Image (tube, rainbow, N blue to C red; front, side, top):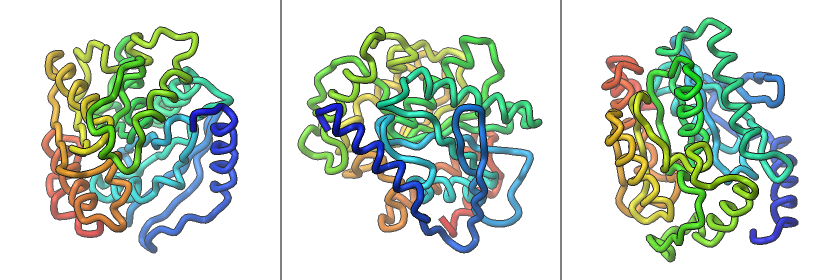
Length: 291
């Protein structure tokens, strides 16, 4: 993954993968959604959801791979624990598009929810890895533009620092994300940009005024220290933060919920967080059995 042609090839394989029907439980329903420059899908994890609320999800994949389909093991479970539909955004990615395009799509999707009658306090943002990055920069952009903020946000293993820092922590322990790949991708996506800009590296941002955050990471993953720094920055800005570092879990481990007990348990913790900040049902912990 250290050559531009490899990114192009991976992106094309990802587009082909979108044609494959990804299995999901029978109680989960999926319908398509459309936006001016991108698409997405509505994921409903069963009956009886509160349709007046929504969770906007940004998938991971380093801004060059992944799609709402690849992350359904996360999105349907988030729908269950939040008791609301999940809008999984198929935002524009590299190598054709830039970080600014991904952010524009995220802001457009959020604005679309507002225009369709969803109140800001009834919206939650969430994302994993690069999607965690997009979650953070979307919050910062909304705040800086004086727009209403969502009720809360959940970041799973967020990629928060795109400066050319050496990543020594867990360099040989994370089985899912090589440190060298992260550094190479960061240099590519920040070409021509100021990597210290908070909308490029949100770990350098001022989090004052942001809604409550939940940050989930693994103790053996390459991006662990970035997640810690985000939590520290947010707390220093007066933001309510729930930080969870799961022992010996790899990068973005909740995506492995189909096979990993710890990943399934993490969704129960997300339910408790949403209830604690008033963004989830009071009995959320009782509704997580299906997750």
